[in-house]
Image (cartoon, rainbow over all chains, first blue to last red; front, side, top):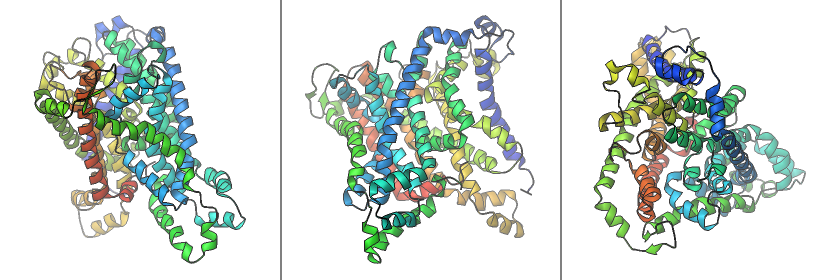
Length: 272
Length: 319
């Protein structure tokens, strides 16, 4: 850009930097210092002490189990999404039947359903199915609410595949199944990684379904663990923030190694 | 424009093409088309765990259920009780207030940040990384973090009494609402900034070059080129803010628990409170249904005003 620097926007961006940077500094500093140091010197001061107790403390209060549970939920949600969405998106893009376009409209409508709206009947259904306080009961609705946005993202990606390629395969007498496995799946890897990241974020950060569908420690996920930790040990701020930092480590790793897919997955999250 | 999603507009063109082709070469186009059976598993799964509950919420809003036994039909009893409930009325106003605050604060902020981040300043890449960190935190983590940071005794307010007075921001309605609006802004501005950044990058440079030749300064360029060009993104972003605002829940649950008293009890929280704390699942369902209707009306506005394709194009240039 050859234009002059924009001082007003620059100043605004600095203010935002402080608003975002200061809390993050306080969070990181608090987790690496002792509770006494934090209480005596205040949150904004430079730490005098260094300790990893806040992280080990989080594990002592059960976060190891919570991480494992969240991991199970996330893996299963990704599995369900990868099993259901690619054939769905393939049909949306390639099928010309009325039923398929009705199904597509169903999913477009589904985009507008907030999870908050269905927690009461979900609680009823999951309890009636005997899945209350069971990770399966969390996995099923979480996966279902990933479907509409994943279908949109993936069908968008699949539309980029040139019709000539389908025609060439059709000339060779390829069945829809062969086109799906040999043409569509390999060419929509970008879209597939986006829906994986999107569903992983939904599952990893999910709070509402676990909140109303589970209650015991054995099925607790990380977000619920954070909430309980806050209500039970609200005064132990370094310990609490240590748990918060731990909960974001996996997402941070994805951010470092798959930034583009993550940002696109995030756009999907907000679109929900 | 290197990834699959971002190139939606040409894709939209391709999508129509095969539909027109059959007339020319029916032999090719009828071969190798998947049937609706491919879409069926996902449709059944989604119907079971999203559509059925949605229908049930409507039914349950006319029933009485305390969480045990089977629900009983009570007609419009839940609705008339809520209609006469002062807390319900208050929660609607609070929801509207918080949603409006969110739109009014976040829109100008994210436009400015987005336009700035779309530029090519050298410090931009480094700063952007920090800017977008709030996006990586879950709504739960953000709320827990700010609850800790704003703790009256051990948080930032205790340090800076010149700014926060007695430091208990959760003790009064005005400051509690301020905290909720601030935390939502902190959490969601980066996302909307991303929308505007993408949109600002896709504004053709020719427009600015022409304006410069005509002698338009930076601010005239901003108001006469940038803002009008961002119109579609503004619609998308505002509607996402409104829907998000209507369904705000974790922030209230963790930061204020609807308090002091019921002073920050917004509708989504009141629904949770009624159903899962008061075991009045019928009334909870009625509030939920009202939320769905509001969200649906707004989503229809999305489709009518901005259109699906325009919504996709607002994500152009995301990187």
